[in-house]
Length: 271
Image (cartoon, rainbow, N blue to C red; front, side, top):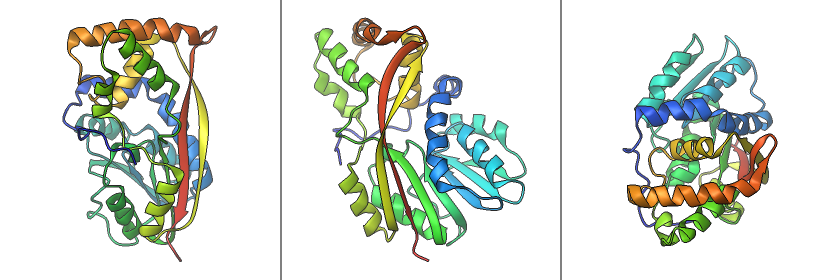
């Protein structure tokens, strides 16, 4: 797994970033719907959305499990949970919480746990999976999406080129990278946590953004304040200008089309 030079900060998020994430988050929501398909949520099941953000995917999951089911969404960012709580209903609830600590939940309390583009922000993946296994019933399912270091997003590659074009050291970007994981690393982590039936697939997801401001807004809000924060304001302006020029090569009549690569992984707790 990648080892960034600095720990990802959860203290740089703001209500404005949370609102931007809610506005532009349909991208990640669509990725999440692809994650839920193989998990095949059933009416009456109990589900935890770990890293629920503003709650759009958890709301969708609540419709799948129906009034006899239950979905709980947790996220460490209070500004995002505040928006998510506007979605609460009789079978959907949200609270602040971290993936590494699910102690509020009883052993075997849930049928399904999923993490949509969450695990690559967390260094202690072993603890996350151990907590998930404890909270799942025997035979319970887990699914997640995560960045794979062997397949960086196109936008990330363009950003590195933009930093170099601005005359800056692109190595400074890695100070707030992500804790991505390969297929072999994930398989080992799942096995160590006691899961069985591991399967994964690296998927190419083509995204369309209306303009460069929208693309940068999504990047900034999804990184909850860790995007380009190792650069000064003036340096950031130079990077953004260079990035805007580079990304124009990806413009289509529908907008800016860029490929994102995510590994979809699934397993279950032994019966």
